[in-house]
Image 1: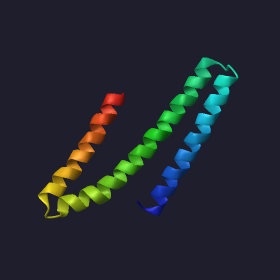
Image 2: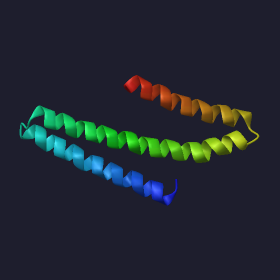
Image 3: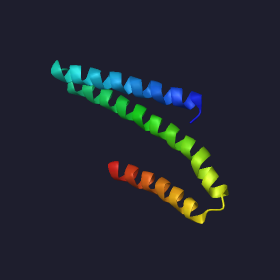
Image 4: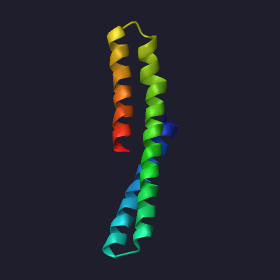
Length: 93
């Protein structure tokens, strides 16, 4: 993964970590439910964006390399991995 993308993802995940700690505090303090839900949604959005960046990088590097290569088994394996990511994402929605 390129340095800039890695830094972006790490920063997003650190932000998510802070959000989660904040959500826990909000729950412990019996804060307003809608405010808690909004923080959870912000965390989910940040995780989704981090996942998108990682997937985009994977498609640009590993998938492209496999498609251009001569190994048909490797192409099938990498394509199956990507398809499984999309299947898993659809199941979690």
